[in-house]
Image (cartoon, rainbow, N blue to C red; front, side, top):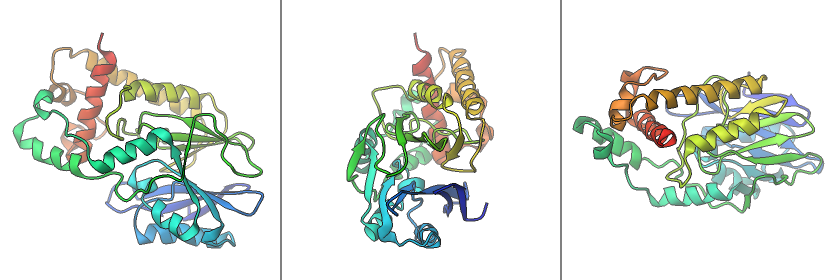
Length: 300
């Protein structure tokens, strides 16, 4: 796919470059409405290159930044990092789920590090984990202009785009369902090949594994083309959500087989996509956090 691609009538995908050497790009989406305005889903990373790429796509459509009416996103920098710049250029309203706005504010203040001693983390691996905890994931994200709730219809004249609250990846992660066009904007909830990290929005009262599995059930019932936040659009959404559900249930079964181990000991024996030895820094912290979440999920 080139940097700009029309997905359906009035819906366009923009491949927004990501720094850091991991995934090369995120996917932003531009939706046209019947009033000639644009609506942005996930504007991308907080770099000049990312913002320029998105606004170049706006220009391709014969619009200007001032034609952007709204911006919907979740708190992670690779999706929301450009929100402040796009809002400043456009005056468009920044929208998030209420729980996401709360989580972003909490993360901006800083959250306590996990109890690495209770997790059984060796002393020589603790500095990299503490550094990963201290690295902000929502830095620079402004407070939203309005918050969204499950079941809301976005104010997009000529389209019925419904909000689906799908927590797990973050507390207020949203999917969006264009009911008439048969499009599911899946964000980081469902990606075509990558298994999204869970619990990456700070501490929550609910278990992110349970939340995520419930959201998979809802999204898996939808028909149409899935438009994810990374990789590429895909079909067979039911099959992919079923595979993700089994991936996490398999991990839960693996965790349940180690009832007396520490989080470190359990995680070390689990099956990781790139192998245990490949994990470091943030990816190691995420693996340990998800192991702890699975342990809580299967606890009697």
